[in-house]
Figure 1 (cartoon, rainbow, N blue to C red):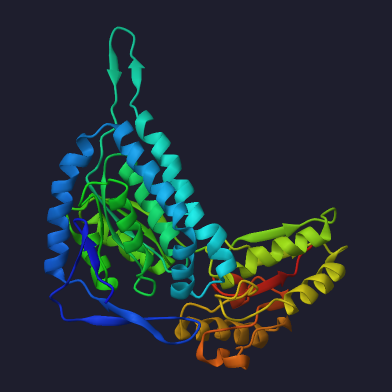
Figure 2 (figure 1 turned 60 degrees about the horizontal axis):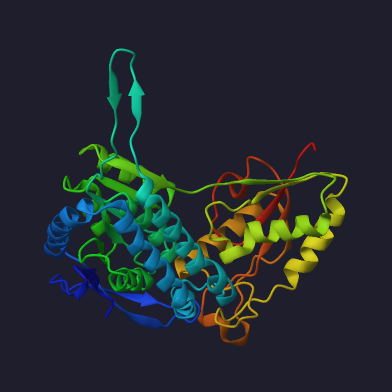
Length: 392
């Protein structure tokens, strides 16, 4: 059972509700997740309030030493955590081994260094002066996303903890595993119990966070629709809000570009983590003088990408996070074809060699896309690259 982690230990909920944590690559159940209820949430808030008194009274240097040790422990456990992340998300192991945990550790290490230098300002007003001081807010709520679970947990917790805040973190219900492992590492590093708590659950728990007046700030990584709801709910208690939402970034390739490097950039910008990245450069604009050569090289390389078991170090494209998300991505492919875009390769479900049990889709490349097409206007969050018509 995957449970919440509160006050330095795992805690059971009394809700009696559970939901399955599914391996996206196999469709098999990894474990059951214990859904937190209001009673457990209130307990977590009480513990956080108590922990805040101790943590906020420590010096920045003291907090920094603990954070630095946590970053070191993360690196020591990189391989084990990377495997757990791959099982939970479906992304290739070759990615999680070198990016997910190490980038989280880098963030914590950076804020470990910042912790001791957080100061206010002295303002000369002529015959008088003023000064400012930076004080922690209190309880910060972090709501994570499923594409980079442990990285996002690190990115949200590190600045909050460095500034003397405590954090109540809710991982995405689709990827609940590694946030509690981060909590264990914080405990091993010497973080006082209750400073970083993990509460498991679905949107219901997220709503508790955004509406509770005892929480001072909410940080969300998620889709635009969810971000609007969070901002609306947080406004009722004047919470500070940080939102990292979706995107539809352009990738512009000029005629003097090194074509092989440009093709590599386009592949990275569209198919890394199966395209489940909010900053992906999916709208690709290529200068007409090099477009034909670019397309030939791009399609040849994309067609050779290995789709398969995410735990295989040779795999380039793993599984999409869920069957529902896979169907959403495939529906966008069909939309593109119906609206006149030319599918050059991919865009179909991969089922050979036992992959039919998972959520595997061959990377799609479209050409001749117009700005009014659905695949150009909307974030797909999947492996779908579209070459846009342009006047370059």
